[in-house]
Figure 1 (tube, rainbow, N blue to C red):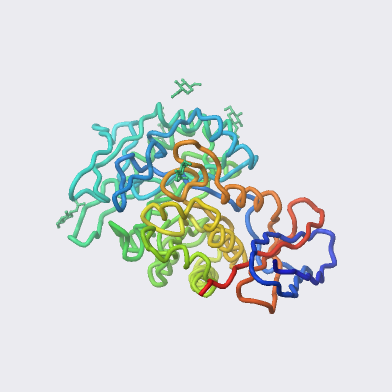
Figure 2: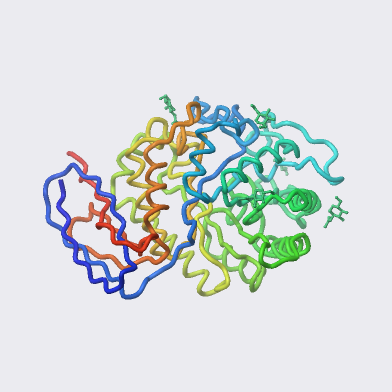
Length: 431
Ligand SMILES: *[C@@H]1O[C@H](CO)[C@@H](O)[C@H](O)[C@H]1NC(C)=O
Ligand SMILES: *[C@@H]1O[C@H](CO)[C@@H](O)[C@H](O)[C@H]1NC(C)=O
Ligand SMILES: *[C@@H]1O[C@H](CO)[C@@H](O)[C@H](O)[C@H]1NC(C)=O
Ligand SMILES: *[C@@H]1O[C@H](CO)[C@@H](O)[C@H](O)[C@H]1NC(C)=O
Ligand SMILES: *[C@@H]1O[C@H](CO)[C@@H](O)[C@H](O)[C@H]1NC(C)=O
């Protein structure tokens, strides 16, 4: 068991220090220094966020189909465990989005005439045809969000009306926002609260399945901002605008911020899948290797720097992070060991001034915080709840000169009381 001596240099009563001690290694004395005179970064009050995705039950990776009925069009929205899991946060952020969002049609208004169900389709993006969100289903989703007090981010269909230009995934032409306008108008008229709208999923940089140039995307963001302003005239209740919801690319992000211009993008969302594919047999080692986990810090810093240089009006968000891609690692991404990645990411992104961190997923795939079939919460769910309840917005400078296998992060506490310092520690891999 590692012993942790902490040196509190704090003066205010406001501070609290996160504690997460995971250790079964040999004894070691470590001194941890926390400076609470000033904060080094600030998170949002609702830093913890989890995603709901569109995948149908026929989404399979490596001969397993781990989504089951957890996708948005199939999920049992009346499940009590689900509702209570969201409610436990008072206001949990939920991001509705994912790979198929750009192929979803909203069955409202005149821009959409046929609204088909998702089907497997060779040559279709991600192997699927277009899919449909009916207003009945949208009502049910919003009822759940309303009764659980969730703060909802909704990802809009950014490929609507565009042309497939090349065989390497480039799409062009202006985004046709008529379908989104009809959905927003419907949503606003029903009084459903949307905290933020996001345009597109993983279409930036080199894209994942499809991509759009940064200049075009920047122009579309301006149009979407105008649309949001028109549908929500009251600035106090107007949803924020997020984008681009994809992997960081320095040049693309710079152009995107410059073209969209001041006060258009509120949240600059980027995705993190730094653990590689879920099927990787070394996933379990990567999860416990601090040198490996450190590498992603550069991306968080680069996003932070892009904002300072080209878009100081925007905030950095991790809009989606599942750790391992292609639905996560079977028997790994929903178990205790995944916390070495997840909790460390929460701490790390906070120090790089990220406001929100959206975990893929709340439910679905191998990385759901809730079990796909039983809805029972896993260890990372409780880690996220602990974080939400203890860790306040002010991030404190925390240093330790002990083992690289020890992680320590501290924030001012949410409630103004002092908690003991807890650190997250790793054990060196056994040879
Ligand atoms: C969920 O509850 C709503 C209203 O409470 C009801 O109309 C609907 O049929 C229920 N759905 C299921 C699948 O039980
Ligand atoms: C839920 O809906 C009711 C009725 O529209 C509204 O008064 C309330 O503010 C909503 N609550 C949340 C958390 O969205
Ligand atoms: C896009 O167009 C190319 C031909 O230019 C075609 O090979 C490809 O299948 C199309 N992609 C989709 C998703 O329709
Ligand atoms: C919203 O819908 C109403 C009818 O339901 C329509 O009168 C109004 O023009 C629409 N507004 C926008 C901005 O589309
Ligand atoms: C859900 O629970 C079942 C039964 O315990 C387990 O076999 C499965 O791996 C779990 N899946 C996820 C994604 O949590």
